[in-house]
Image (cartoon, rainbow, N blue to C red; front, side, top):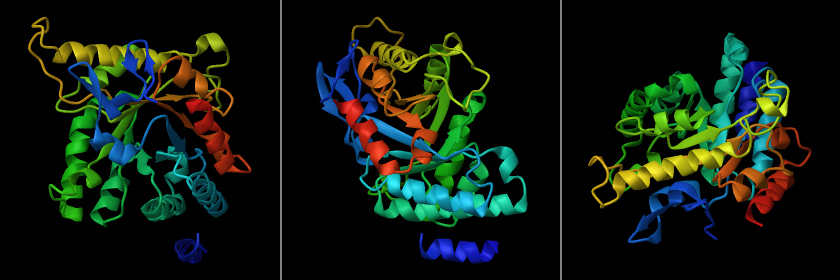
Length: 313
């Protein structure tokens, strides 16, 4: 039955300044006090505000769930409004052989889908499956590293980039196209700074939360247990302050230069079409990450359009 399903599956299936820093993240930097668009970033990520879409935790729990997940993502990404898709499933659901097959099938189908769409594709906390995909020339962009493992980002990046270069015959002309995307999560300003300072390079994006009450964190039952919608903007402001101080020419710093701007900041946790504007427009995040609001919608495309409009009004 699994084999039959997999065969069938393969056959079908603006710049706003907030609090003294730009709200469009590393798409921009300053030169002589002028804003300059970083084409290296925008060529892959597009323009802010960004939307990241995560699969539901049980996305690989059954054949039906995999198919529903693919259909939802296919619908949500039609207009190019989703910038990042993250395959994030419960570890317990992928331990068995059947679940592992389904996860691999889901990843391959999404990699195939992104050839005609504009989203980046990463896998949560599974370096091995990304290495396997890259070694088989399957277009996966990278991995999301858990917060407590964020110190491993430099070594993970090195390993993935080595396999990517070997598999895709990367040259100087197409290096950006196949460069690895690595993200992580943070729940405090200190955690965000720590990951950014990793050498030689930290994460490309951060999921910062928890902004609102969400099923993903059932232990946080009350609003006062949340980090809140202001944290993503605070993290970004701190990182840009650190970046600008490290690269000023006044002689006030210790001589350390940081060549890469801060990562893209996604607000996460209970994000929907009604509140997505708050962490972005009011507090300066670069975009939002969402799960059930889109994945469980009867019309994912419409919800994504509403969120994009809400964040750009």
